[in-house]
Length: 194
Image (cartoon, rainbow, N blue to C red; front, side, top):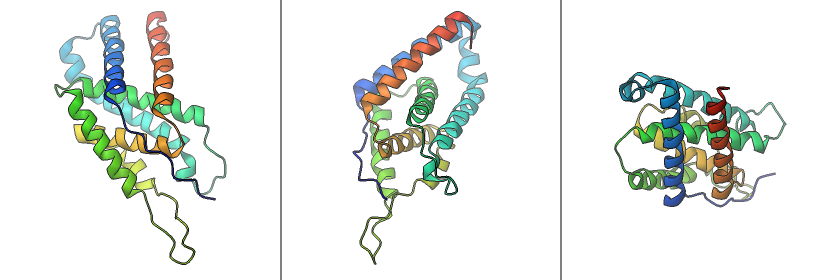
């Protein structure tokens, strides 16, 4: 049974700016607590951040198992899926904040890529039954790992939002889950339990 067509998620400037600002506050706290200087943060730790993001992408893809694990019948756990999604968002904003590109430019690029990926996942109609064939996300889930450039980060973000829309998440769900995880991350830093 195919899912009905879900609403597209478009990132708003208000939410994008909020996420960027909250991420910078958290990252500033981490830099201060860990004694990380600007050069280390911007250069030496870049590979650490990319590896971390790829790890989170892998966890998210694993939770989106119904999109590619044809051998399993178990439905995804939506609470875990959104948790993994906000981990990705944390690291994407961390990496985007390191660059001197304005948020408006990122936002426009992400929203354009959302349209692009959403259209590419449509497989059309089965010509014999005239039923819509389900969207195919596999190639784009794999593309989420390509995060070494600004374009790769933008693509990863857009694909993430397209997949979240597939599961009927809304921007409000993403914001709420992000806020919760961000608060947990601050508490972990303060208590030294990271």
